[in-house]
Image 1 (tube, one colour):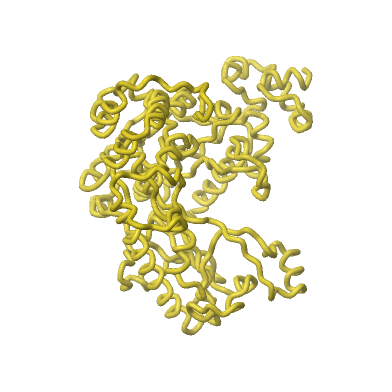
Image 2 (cartoon, helix red, strand yellow):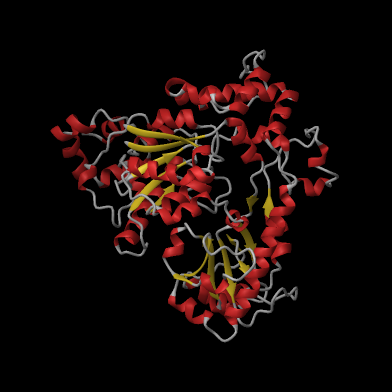
Length: 532
């Protein structure tokens, strides 16, 4: 059997990389493809595995090779949860399921093979490699009892990459047991428009970094000078000032503003990017990586979908949430939450939760809120205690030393929702240094207050569903695009649960507004909508 024939069976491009990988496994590939088991069980799959997946030891496996060989994700997960962003999968359901003993891991819409290459586009190939490594890592933690009270793993599928490998990656997922979360599209848009985004990375450089330390740390793989790194706080940074720099919103056309100018007031051009913009409706509704991709996800997963429970966002908000979670747990075959947790499920999330996780480097020698240059240098991270602020439902919360109770008397700090965690013995020892805990407490108090203040400052600029409909009334092209996208997004509901669409009050009002519009002409210049 030739390499070309193997590529044809696996639907692989014949190139140098694939040829090298196939040749490396030829002694396993050829007898497998010629076996009765392959012909009877696997040959009809959209992307048949080129090696028997049941004989693979994933510990130490090469994820790139697994992708090339069409190896399905190992069944280290029990079920999948899929839908769009803005429906509560990440913010609510992810946490609720954690309280029921299930931890989620998701496909990443930003996954790249080379994170430092600005010219590389995210790809499903990179997403597969990242997710496979993550699954192996989280299973190892679970098996070694590093994740306390975690009995189940699930895949969270609310990111989407529309590239040539989309069909392949979803064909490698077993979605035989699934939970699908849906929401009125107008309410969904409202949440997305109001959704604050936080800068995740910042450019760090340290002019005082001496060359000897630099070379030593680089050699040992600890630091890279002038690196783009995950953002982290230290005592010198004023949380109130920092939050104003790192919180932003999705953009939109400047000329498009709602009639209700009270929502905008007289905000300067520079400040506009730091406030929700009603014109970002146009940005969000065509962003298939995050939203309005339910129809295509349903189609891509349909090959393995067997049992699928459908829930609306409104089902697990407020007092109904506990009963809803009990029903979901029974369907998924996981332990129902203890009745004592009912108030936790119905409680509104603390303001701080939206801004987590955050990392703080605590150093006894670092002055609080100092503007003095060099007060905290890049290499000072090595001698600092690394503190993680996470949600109570994060796996990190149960994977380290939880010191949250020490901060429970801070105004606005809800120990039921926020955790302060130290993940290593070394960091715990550093933290116990004289006076450092008190200093950390003062800093976290300032941080929580700054988050509450910033959250309240932003809340008066938020839009509601009526504002979204008012925008559509004034923008016919936006309506045409929205209606075009909804044909795909609502595919599953139209064919299986039309009564849910009929119950979408805001969406029904949208349909009334758009009822006389002619269909979108996708051949026109200036029309850019993902064609699935």
